[in-house]
Length: 330
Image (tube, rainbow, N blue to C red):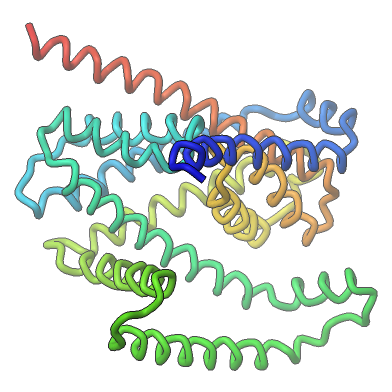
């Protein structure tokens, strides 16, 4: 297979995944029920959720500035925000490319080397991944009984007793220790297979990225910004519950679960989470007795409102960058 063919297939993969997931979701729902939900939704709560999402992106821009400054470059919050929003917009067309575009725009507006900016984006993504894993672990064990009962019911078994919690915790601890020992052993070896070496390099990058946070002059401020970002993400999930009568009774625990499921859903190579978000979020809401059609209505409103907000903000950001460049040339 030629490199050109591989490139074409890779480009076709993303929309294909999205289309297949959308078709699967459509075959599982009652379209009339979903349309009724969308028409009867309270869009006041949707607007509040969109504002929370926009604020999270602004704080991400402020946090990015904090990572850039120790390298000796002057980074402006305004241009950082523009670059972040344009990057998110591009991701709706081609996943992952948005991060490159984000760095390229920031380099152009603030005269900072692209390679330096790519390093800062990698660092913040590493930290976000670690936060995601931490929140996931806390959520799973805080709602273990609910999850176990759901699985047992799905398997037509007796209701879970919760006694497996200690076994799972112990198993995870042993797996973690074993994984660490294997990693340290492989790290000392030479001539590892290419795939294994890539995994080792990836883990090295995670550790280095996490450590670099604490080399900042104000690491506590970086942590504070991270908490605010994730709090806004949580509010997006929670506020949209109130937009639909069928989900308005759901609590904070359901919002945390939805946030985690949505976070992992957008990792799948589909443009802007299209399809993957609409497939996985309703699956997570099944835990709380929300049927697939209602869960899909929630997913459509949540994803659609955030997408609309990003496209508008991204378009305006591109316009502002163009105006600034034009002004600088005069």
